[in-house]
Amino acid sequence: MLKLPPLRDRAGDLSLLIDKLLDQINQESAIEPGYKDKKISARAKNLMLQYSWRGNVRELLNTLRRAAVWTSGDTIHLEDIEDALLPLSAADNNDKKILNRPISEGINLPDILKNVAAHYLKRALEETHGNKTEASKLLGLSNYQTLSNWLKKYEVN
Image 1 (cartoon, rainbow, N blue to C red):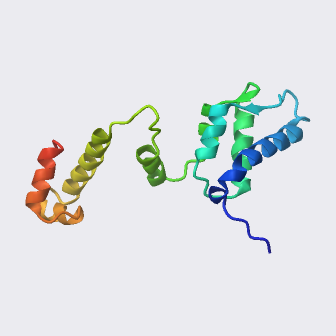
Image 2 (cartoon, rainbow, N blue to C red; image 1 turned 135 degrees about the vertical axis):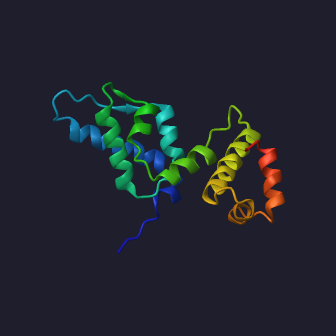
Image 3 (spheres, rainbow, N blue to C red; image 1 turned 180 degrees about the vertical axis):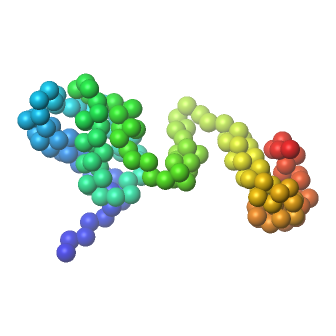
């Protein structure tokens, strides 16, 4: 049995695969009334190249098919690919929002860290009904005083 690595480990193949699969979709769909051959915008293709594919070529093909069907024009745009990518899970989507933000135009790392810290500080206090000793244990902090310092630093009441 031939065992191929997942798409995420074959980044060099992705661009060619996207082009080939889109050609295949266009050929298969030519018999559908009203279907226009699709091409893919550079931004949409870049998103697909940067995406952390969990599956195989079938996942890539199905994503392209959804985007081709859902777009009314002849070009698949970034938004079409974003819509066609299946949501992985809430945790994966949150990780993507935090960990995979584009940084070419700059990010505000202190604000991101503040948001993450405040989120978990509030959750720990809610889960422990305000018990700082228990909340500090949940968060891996050495004691309630350290937790109090974090609460003050990140302006959590």
